[in-house]
Length: 366
Figure 1: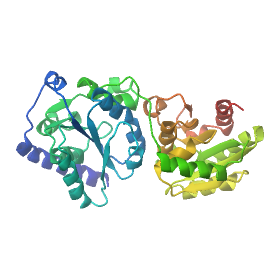
Figure 2: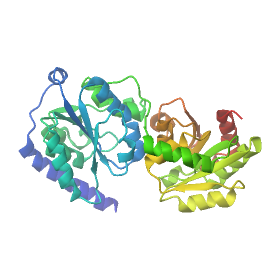
Figure 3: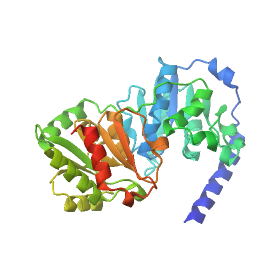
C-alpha cells in the first residue's frame, strides 16, 4: 500500500509540474502584496481532519482582522463544514465532497461567480495538489500559499503569485499548530494575536442542546460528558480507565452522564459502558454544531486527543483531555478551558485512572 501511494503521489507531482507550465503565475514580491487591497478573499483548506481545521481557525481570524471589510469564503471538506458555517470569520462556505467529485463542477461555478480577488491556499500539515488546482480554477486574480519546499520550490511557484515560507524543523518544534498555520500568512502581513479556537453552534443547535441537556443531566448533579473514542487508534486511552475516572468523580459528587459516540466508536463505547457502574445516555448521529452546543452545557468533558476535544474547547466547554504519543504543546488548542494529562512516556496503557481522576476532580472543582 505504501508503494502504491508513493507511486500515485509521484504521478500527481509530475502531472502538476506539467500543468504548471501552462499556468505560469506572475510572481510578485511580499511588499507588492502588502500594498494591495482585497474585497473578496477565498481560503482553500479542504483537508478532512477536523482537529487540523480547528487549529486553522486562528488563520481565518487573521484574514478577517487584516481585511475586516472583505467578503471571505472558505473551501472546506464535508466533514468540516459544520465548524465554519456560523463563524464570524467566514461569510460563505463551499463544500468540496471528495466522495462525489462530480459535485465539484457546481461548486467551481459558484466559486467563479463570486469573482474573488485573492485566493489563499492553506496547507501546512500536508501538501495538497487538489488545493492548488482549486485555487487556479476559482478564477481569483491573485493566488498565494505556503511553499512546496519538500517537493521542490518550482511546483508552487508555477501556480502561486506569491509563495510563502514554512518553518524549518527546528522552528516548528517550538510552535503550536495554530501558530504553524499563521506562520506563512504573517510573512504576507496577515496576522492576529489571538490563537484561541472558536466554534459558534448557531441558534438551532443551541435550542436542541438546551432541551437535550435537560433530558441527559439531572439538576444539581455533576454533568459529565465522556467521549472515550478517537479517530486514531493510538490516541485511545483504555475505555475501562475512563469508566474508572467517571466512577471516582461520581463518588465525590453525584453525577449524571452523557456518552458521545462517533461512527468509529461503537466498540469503544460498548467497552466503556460495560465497565462503568454509572449508567449514561448515548449521543450519536448529531451534527458538529449540535455536539458543540451540548458539550458546553456540561460541567466537565472527558476525552482523548481527538476532534471532539477541539470542538469542545472551541465551543467553550471545560475539557480534560488525555494525551499519549502526541505532543500537546504542538497539537492541543491554546485556550484557558482545557487541561491536559499526558502519559509521560507516550504509553497510554501506563497512565493510571487515579492520575486522571485527580486532575479531573481538581478541574471540576470537586
